[in-house]
Amino acid sequence: MSNRIKIVHVLNTLDVGGIERIVLELCNRLDIQKYEVTLVVLSNNFLDFKHNVAKHINLILVPLKHRHNSLFDTFSLFIHVSKIIKIFKDIKPDIIHTHTFQYNVMPVLLAVRIAAKNASHFHTIHTSGIHYENKNIKHWIKLKVEDWWYNKCKTQIVCISPTINEQIDTLFKEKKYPAITICNGIDLEKFRSTLNLNQIDKVIRIVYTARLDNGKSHDTLINAFSTLTKKYGNLQLILIGDGLLRSKLELMALDLNVVNEVKFLGNCQNVPKILGQCNIGVFPSEYEGFGIALIEMMAMALPIVCSDLPIFHSIHLNESNVFFFPPRNDNMLALQIEKFIISPELRYEYAQKSLQISKLFSIDTMVSEYEYRYNRIVKKNE
Image (cartoon, rainbow, N blue to C red; front, side, top):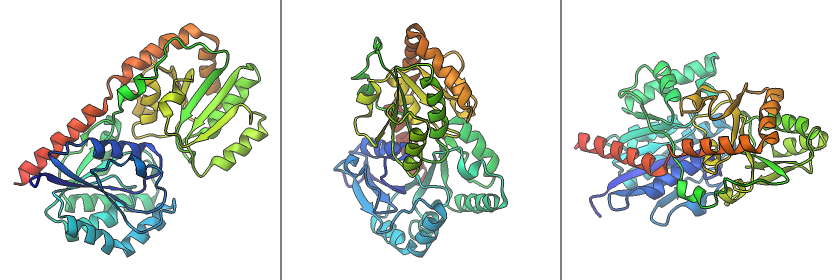
């Protein structure tokens, strides 16, 4: 056990979200005989997922507060970078793998350069949005600085989809190694255990799993749902997730007279069970890195209506297995959902297609690919 590879994963929070869930699955599933895993969280609030950290993982919380403001958090991390430096010096890791928000990665990279020059550095990019699509001068300058840091740290960039990989190759010209793609995965068995392909209910439940935050387009979905309720009286909208926009969205549901039909469930630990009680999955997000919650809905054999984004086409979705609509277009979203409402046969057909797509994204495959990359770079550095 003393010859195990020491890996430090760095994450912003342990809040409930797709990035956090994927990183925890990766940490927990790495072979304990081969890897000694430490998870460093750059804040000590928003810890809803703390109980999901396996007992063999060394969990370290940096004593700072996350404030949902990336610039403020980055400034705070720069001021307290000595805390991160001390952690790296104490652990003496072979690999440091960051999953931080894009602004926050720079103070961590500074700590890598000071305290862990001999460690190999991985950084996974989990989104295609935010400043990666923003064209203003502030983001351009920030991207140039980020590119320079990745080059200095000889960072191996990991992209969670082919679309992000193409984007990164265009944005980052100075990186030492070509970016690689490792798609996210889910625990298929956990979702299959409550699978019910033949479910036909009197109430049609439409479900969306996402943080209640900007870019997730909950308002577009609620507008579309309101339109549908004027025509159909047997509908419910199930929203799984929490976030800064919850109060605003609850008021919106009240104003549109659908407050009794829209169920805000908050952060849930029994997502597969809830999905198993639903009939139609929707994913109206304006941008995504991968869409792990979308694959979870497909694993539960839900027919899918989702925004027409390049990222989804790159993970094998097309007009033959999902219904697309233009982002932010609530009228088209309502029309696409309506096709599934009126036809149980169509729901069943597309449920089977969802199930087949989900089989491509196993968590075991994802972990194996990371382990291969870790072993390869450690052997290269020996």
